[in-house]
Length: 396
Image (tube, rainbow, N blue to C red; front, side, top):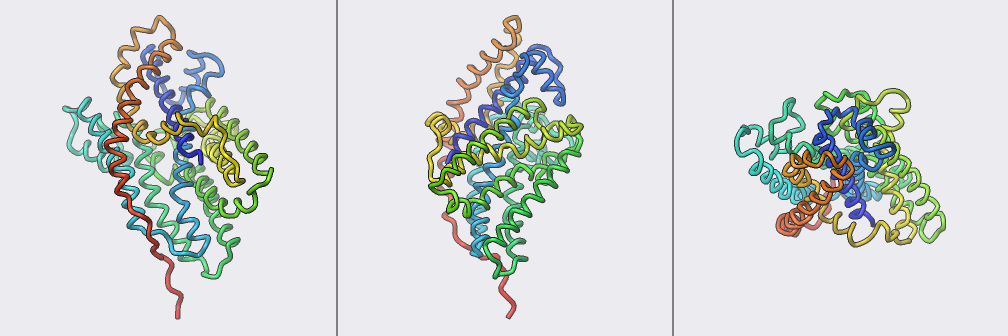
């Protein structure tokens, strides 16, 4: 599966978007989040937005992948009327995956930039993953502002078992596979649309937009893909239809990618959306990534291999280390962003090229060390899944 390569591509998109913002700041351009697409077009030229502002859809790909991969065992257990996965193993594995690398990265930001001037409460909020729920973020929370997505990930890890339990609790034991599939798809679709409607209506200033009710729409399309997989494999395996469907998903996903470049990141800039066109572009930013994920999945369901342009060694390497890369990618930017002002006379494109070279020259080895000495040792402690039935006993 092309999960790691897609993560690698999403990571690169996020980094380039943040470097673009750093170049604009160094060029004395007053940034306004809701006007970022227009500013990029004014300074980098026409049609530059999809290339330079793809970070929003890159982050959405992360969420959609999590929705697919994390929900997969729960969805399969529910569809098969089997015991749900062990909550103990699930919780331990998720904490081992998220916490050590996050604490290591936050400690680096704290030591390098916030040795003084930060309160104990402000530090604790970040380490305990609750900075999204504070009306006024402290200096450390501001420096690791991109980590809001990690808080949302953890919230999804809590939401998923609870949702699986409720579905199991209220679904008749003798329900057919078709009936259970209809329930999962219907609930996921309703949840995604409701979450998107809340996000669409929320102002940028609302602290709630970085909480799970407003971002659940990014995860649930992945859950729907996980639900479709068991029935899609026997239907598509060995058939030409797999290629046709994959090509269609890729085409519409790329159209969404281009559309998002014109509107920016709806999670951060919800109040910039106005009118039918903006709503459509916002929907593309939320649901478009699921099509980009669906394209290689459909090929796999049809028994075909993923194209080498996507599934290759460099993208796999980036994808495997994407978590450390994402956590640490702002650190080099803080170190060299002031020096970019000396390149203003060369123009924004040359400034961006220099910034990209310096960024990855510093970021890649740093993230590789984090992956080797922090992530991998803790991931090796992950527990094998054990089944634990959350289904209530039938009345005697």
